[in-house]
Length: 313
Image 1 (cartoon, rainbow, N blue to C red):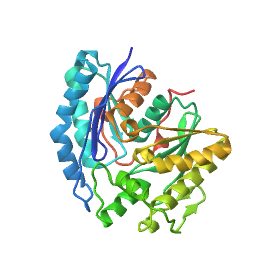
Image 2: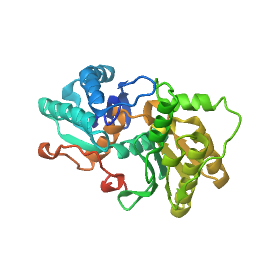
Image 3: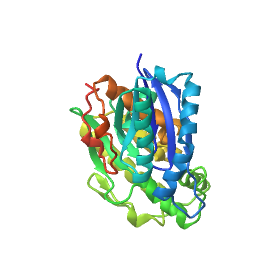
Image 4: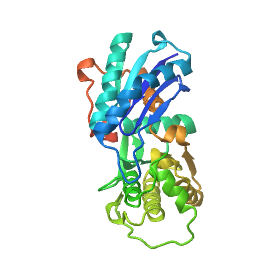
């Protein structure tokens, strides 16, 4: 059996998870939360991660009931993400790999979300809607790549929601998107808003003052287009915004109309976490991927379709 430990810290979440042949052994996480009306700065976020990462590492090992000798590979988020937090986590992962004498593996953050979603839901070959604070993409697998069929042309949907929350001083605890969702449930009137779909891409920067229903309708539309293009009968929603029950409900209506299946995970796995990096690392390690120490850098820009997916048929 192959055991992989994954380190994730590309934004305001710091998580370390351990995977053993598809089983999540542990997945502790901490969140850097700022006051209402404020975002999180890279330097402050990195400082938070430095302060808790060793504690989270200890928790991950203890919850899994494992020792360093039981680990086969150390995976970490190579990118995309915020520079300072990425460097902080990569440094610890590199150090741990050398101290424990284990191979190191840099993982694409987006692919971590996809592989975790596939593991938890057992979706076969879905069209993937990846929605988070830093990314908005419609993705499908083809010829050893996760191909991007559509994406945002300006800001990510999660960033759009976060910025809206900051403007009207909505709490960041546990997250701005969650609090917007709870407030929206109390609403009864739909307000028409700018609806900007350009081919397979979307634009969110012009509707910051209006938000949720229209934003999600745009995402459902481009996902359905990708499904039609690929002949897909499955949708998998991943990323932090994927926790939103209204988004899941709207996507579910579309899937039902097409006779398709919808797959999604709960907040344990859709929000950034270490186990998703461990799972993607597990797949990559078993297919022969290893990152040499001199190549174990990070990158803030690392597209999903840059990675050769050697572990899928």
